[in-house]
Amino acid sequence: MTVDRIILKIEGPEANRRHVELPVFLEKVRNFYRMLNANIKSDERKGIALNVVQLSHSSPAIVGCQPTVNGQPYTPLIRNIGETLYAVKEGRLGQLNDDFLSAMEKLAKDEPKKIMSSEIQITGANQEDWHVCRLDDEFRAKLVQARSEEHIQISTIDGVLEEINIHSNPHTFKIYDASFASVTIRCQFPKELVGDVQGALGNFVSVRGECFYRPDAAFPYKIDVREMEILPPSEELPSLSDLRGIAPGATGDKPSEQFVRELRDKWG
Image (cartoon, rainbow, N blue to C red):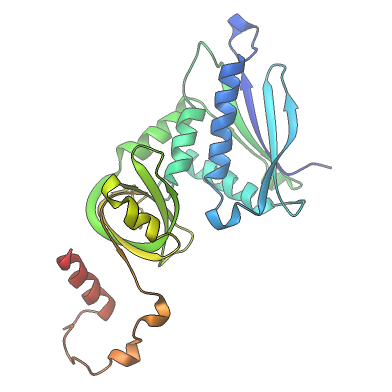
C-alpha cells in the first residue's frame, strides 16, 4: 500500500559520484522542514507530527516525511503542500506564505558544484494525489517573479497576534487576518515596541505600516510595523443595532465598515 508522504530527493554532482555532502544535505533538510512547517497554522502545530518514513543516503539522497495527527496520516497538509507547489509552477503567486517562499528559495537554490538536481514528490493512495515538482531553473524563475512583482503601500491590518520572536533581527510576530482566518501575515517590528507586542500576545490588534503585497493578493504577506493598537474583545464592541440612529447620515453613501476604516486610517 502506498503511504501518503512528501519526499525530498537530492542528487549530488558527477564529480562526487552524485553523492551529497553532509553539510549540504543537512542544510537542504533544514529548509525542507521549514517549507513543511510554513504550511501548518500555528494553532495546529502542537497536534501535527512530521515523521520520517523514508530515508536513503545513496544517490539520490531521499528524505520522506509523513504528517500525522494522533498517529494517523494527516492528508490535508500533504494536499495543501502539493497544491501550493503546483500554484508556484503555474505562476499563481498572490497568496504565497513568506516563510514558504523563503524556504523554497533556499531549497531550490542553484548550486551546480554541490547539487546536480533536486525535486519534491507528493505521493498518495490515489494517482491524482501524485505530484513531482522539479526544483530547476523554471521553478526558480517563478520564485524570482514572486519577489519582483510585489508592491508596497501604507495600510492597516487587524488580526490575532501570535508567534513572537525577539531573537531574530528584525524582531517578528505573526497575525491571522481577522477577516480571513487562514491568512498568516509576518510582521517585523522595532525594539521600541517589544513590551507592547509581548503584552498583546493572543489578542486582536491593529497594526499599521508598510504592507508588502504580491500580484493580485488581497492581503499583504509582510508588514513593517510602525504602530500597533490592542483592540477590545469582540463581545465588548457595540453591535450595529447599538449604533443605529446615533448619527443618521454620518457615513454619506459609504458602507459603515468603509467609513470607519477611512476614519481610522486618517487618525493614524
